[in-house]
Length: 341
Image 1: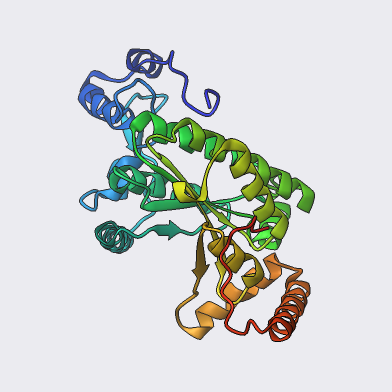
Image 2: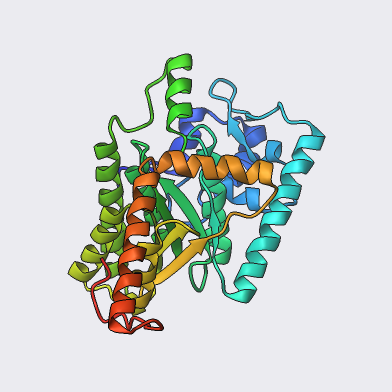
């Protein structure tokens, strides 16, 4: 965590001396530093992401940095038109509306992940939304894609940020769905592939990241300051999570870890988990068919063993129907007094 955060030995005066800030820009420079260090603990983010959730600011006003040669504060973003600035503020108004409604109804908002070249901005905005809305419990969740090499470091950094600034942290862990796009773009533009080399490496990343989250859940258990969704259709991953929870003493009724699968997929895991007392969510894609179908196709590609899983599920259903007919338990309701996986 220490490596993921800014160096505490770098003070505002040190930065001012290094940059030779001009007298005319001293006041602007001071305000910039105050925005960078909004938790007032001497650790600064490189940009003032906190202002992005305030719809009264323009992006171009927020993203200013000292020019290394002149010491003057200059914007680093100048390509956005007034119309684009307004589009961004409209987006933030909608996000605030959703987050406020979720907080009022005591439900959760899972902000999805996208390609790695979009994700830094999405993640930083999501963290600022957490800071605003996750003051009493985890309402807003960020999504972390474990097929990326940097996922563990990003999760550790964000956990530390939440701890320092005193807000509740919510994370949804997935494997990821843009593997081919990521690799093609990396080859085309000539930068290092951000994706793990093998599926086994992705599994290792998922388990390492989940283990760290669960470890920190235990450390902050009294306050329940961390909430995790294990979003996976992989039975081995669900089994790992359940075993790790038992190992660390995290009970299903602690309600700090939940599981999520798509509606109609992996029901042979979802139902036993729910019957055993675990929190389980079935995700329902909703929207115009031309937007929903590409999403579902990516999920199918992500779960390349989907047909095998469907075949297994049908076999389990046939076995259960036969068992109930033979034992006269047509309306049998499982009690869940068993280990789910």
